[in-house]
Image (tube, rainbow, N blue to C red; front, side, top):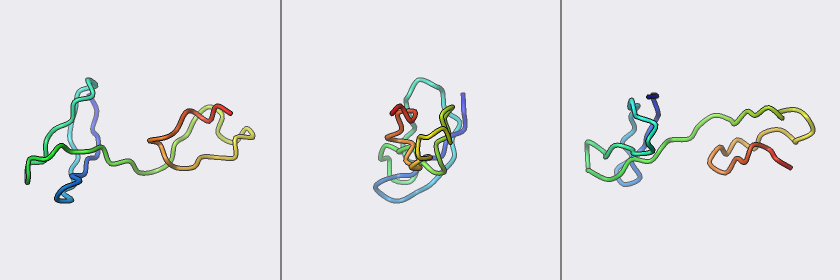
Length: 67
């Protein structure tokens, strides 16, 4: 289990929830829409700084800097 940040795409409600690693996310307690994981910060991988050009910061599309 892990704490993850979520945001509701419908009403903008933000929360931090304790979730299982099964990929199921909670619904928004305000409007009932499916919460989306809030991605913030930067991705860091084993190849960070080894000619990879650094991190683009978009963890949703990160493939581990495999160039």
